Amino acid sequence: MQNGKKTALICGMAKSGIASAILLYKNGYKVIINDMKSEISGLQEALKDIEYVNAMGQEPETLLDGVDLLVLSPVIPIFKPFARKAQDMGIEVIGEIELGYRYCHRGAKFVCISGTNGKTTTTALTGELFKAAGKRTFVLGNIGIPITERAMEVKDGDVIVAEVAALQLESIKSFRPNAFGMLNITEDHLNRFQYKMENYIAAKCRGFENQTPQDFAVLNYDDPIVRDMAKLTRARVLYFSQEQDVENGMLLRDGYMIWRLDGHEQRLIHRSELQIPGDHNLENAMCAASLAMCMGLDAEAVCRGLRAFRGVEHRIEFVREVEGVRYVNDSKGTNPDSTIKAVKAMTQPTVLMLGVGDYDKHSDFTPLFEAFGSTVKGVIASGINIPAIKAAAEKTGYKGEFVEWYGNFEGMIKKAGEMAGKGSTVLLSPAAASWGQFDNYEQRGEIFKDIVNKL
Image 1 (cartoon, rainbow, N blue to C red):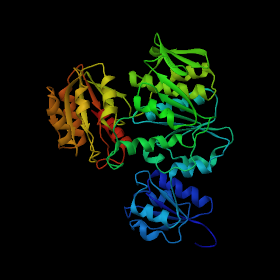
Image 2 (cartoon, rainbow, N blue to C red):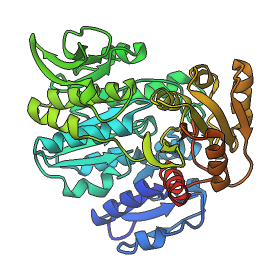
Image 3 (cartoon, one colour):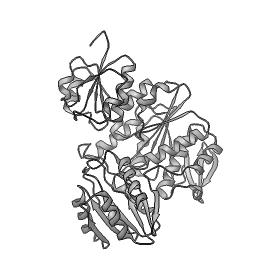
Image 4 (cartoon, rainbow, N blue to C red):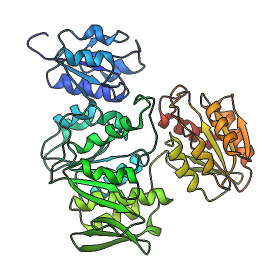
């Protein structure tokens, strides 16, 4: 350490790493940056306003001497040997959301959303509900803006609506949501959690551990795994359900969303008033509205926000119709269950673009093919997951057209359009991560839209 400053080692220099480095430097830390890559395009420019020690490309276990705080990227497991060594040396090891939480004003409220699918849509919608009610609101977290990036701007009375993933919750210590919504649990990221579903679920559930009886846990009653999470929190449990008449929380009656709390009911909107399609989006809306209502928002403002919300980019996003073929961007569909929801929202015969990335999560695509029904007339698959996708098609006896694509993305899109024909839809919902071919699902979706808009 120099001049009595504490030293922080930041491992993983994507968005959250950059924001963490800047935050810690501004708060008096000596900062060391590290990544498995020796160079990252744009990193030097992003850090131009701070001083730091560049340890890019070096083995992190060689950098631990003199370090007080180790901040891990969400993609780096907390059980990595170098992280365990750091803990054995007395170094505090945390992730970005824990760091951001510590620097936010304690008078602010945290409203968090997790689950396997629907997090981004629900987070964006929840943020809009709080804004519609006149609250100064920050929409942060896994949705794309790190909490650390805005933490120093947060004031007493502000609301932070945050999407929090299992990869981020794994390393929390004091992080405490005042309201925590859990949407659903299906297989995802098992390669990251030692191929054990129980490890993945346990990481998700860490969001409950610091809650108090003054907080709220908002749970999907229709998902048995989520329903059973009630026993894991000291917070007041509220359920939302499309199927059951829950005692406290959000239920559906004659198509209307009904908020019930302590024997009092308020009717919100009819499901037909939502601008986001599908039963999965009704689930997302019920969770968002429950989070808003339990935090005391006015029902009229909540209804206004629900009616106005048009969805999020890259999630069942209509792009354009070309010669009678509709093109829909669902690049956010990064696992089979998410893609199932997108397929079920289609109202025309559909050609589905799968894979479109070179990262293997070891997902099982069989349930996806089983869910096609008569909707999916064709599948075109590319990337490292082609063998697993093809195996699922064969196992389920899929009878539609199946194309393995080894060319470029533009050619794949054009081929999908030919397969679809007039009166059908081309749906980019890869059921797989984008990594290896793209930086992230956003880039994959943007390139898809750019190509479609030039057809």
